[in-house]
Amino acid sequence: MSIAYLGPPGSFTQAALSGLGVPPDQAVPYPTVRQALDAVRAGDASAAVVPWENSVEGSVTESVDALTSGRDLRIVGETLLRVQFALGIPTGTPDTPGSTPDGAPDGAPAWLGSVRQVLTHPIAHAQCRTWLGANLPRADVVTTASTAQAAKEVGTAATPGAAAIASPNTLRRYGLRIVADDIGDRHDAVTRFVKVTRPAAATDAPPTGVDRTSLVVPLADKMQHLHTVLQEFARSQVPLTAVLSRPGGCGLGTYSFLLECEGHIDDPGVGVVVASLTRHHSAYLLGSYPRADLGRLALSR
Amino acid sequence: MSIAYLGPPGSFTQAALSGLGVPPDQAVPYPTVRQALDAVRAGDASAAVVPWENSVEGSVTESVDALTSGRDLRIVGETLLRVQFALGIPTGTPDTPGSTPDGAPDGAPAWLGSVRQVLTHPIAHAQCRTWLGANLPRADVVTTASTAQAAKEVGTAATPGAAAIASPNTLRRYGLRIVADDIGDRHDAVTRFVKVTRPAAATDAPPTGVDRTSLVVPLADKMQHLHTVLQEFARSQVPLTAVLSRPGGCGLGTYSFLLECEGHIDDPGVGVVVASLTRHHSAYLLGSYPRADLGRLALSR
Image 1: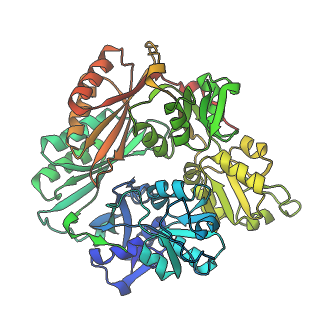
Image 2: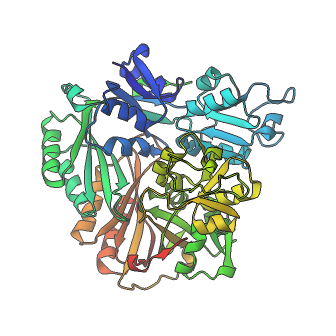
Image 3: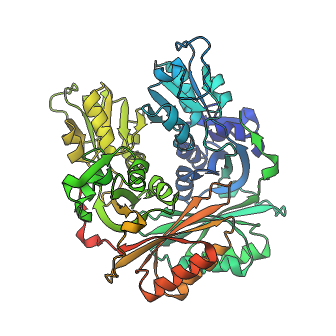
């Protein structure tokens, strides 16, 4: 069966597929994270790959909310991808001969003045805020479901004055001319992607020795319980790797927590913690899966 | 001296000013949260009012990041505002006589087909996702610094096909025609706004008996210390009201935590907790201030 991913083709998520062992001919692009996950829920796809966490902007809350709004999906794998951003404009945009698109506002090249609208994903926007503020302070920023979608729209419509922020490869794929490269605030930005299936399809992979476990603890307004929850991890010496608060949806001060830790649910320590949190705090498991290695990072260009 | 707020005039933040006792003639609009806070830092404004937390979408991370990126500002007050969203289009958009803009996709009114672009703030966008998905699934969403900015742009440019999401009052202020009202996913959405000054200007208000204290604990990669941090609150029986993780900026798995609790730093319990966290975890205080009352909510229309 097919594997859904946040498209369109050329997206960062597509670049992450190989790190999760997804054969290119099985991958099917979906326009939003929610639609990719719903395809798995509906049985139209056997798995989905979606962005999960970014080292600069934090969790991809759209993915976390879409995945945790049901208890019916399981994370079975993860991979890391170094992300890099460039600005592309439609070919044919007038330019001044010899102008260098180096991003300097002084002596700015002619194309800079032509850009009135920048299309990109909100997380890419947040990471390029400094460059945009210095170089295109008056441009409107149009939100798209992925950076590749932005490149596709600008490349297809070729609207005068429109530009896209995406990876250099993606901009080229959609026929855009790269006029400013490496425009992110940080050059070591990394995004973590996860592979998700239905629980029945999640053949509980045995511990590899280097695993991660993700779970949700819906505390609602019982914030004082967070201390008890974290105490379980401390007592079992299970290292936490992520703590994310999300609004519980029932007013200010109500929260659900996404917790991630080192280890596998079949490891004694993690097993005890998850069992206790499930019993006492209605926690539910999102998955135990091999942890991706920061040393073997793929670079998306 | 003037008081900076996230403008333009007509913004939700402007509607929140009276709840913080800011006289209208002292309030000066700024285009972004960061610019409003920088005006206080630079001494151009004596205080700033910015959005801080939304009951549906969670913390306004732009404000949290802009405020906590320096230790030089102090929260001195807060207020709550019920937020409501409507869709406005330029007057003069062709309509079908008798059509009812009730948001129903079947028998949709003529103006629906004319909307190709929706301008709004990312948090308003997130709260109107269901309505937009059902009624304007193909419209581009253009991000603006505030919902009022969206209304102003659509009202001023009157670009055919553009619409804005903002409060009904704001849409009217900028001459837009309201074609769909109450389009948020939740009707009880509340936003909390905070007033911020330089520490020297923060005349440490005495405890009122109903206060809140906000602080930042930069844990970096020492996530296991979060348990110890929360233990301090539990031991002193200080109720937490908010826990927000923000990426520490140094790669995946490094975090800073915004913690908010009931009580004033001059209360014995809170004082002990803050002193201990400052000493052992480099925590720093964002402020102790009177807590806003959910029973006295202003409604922004």
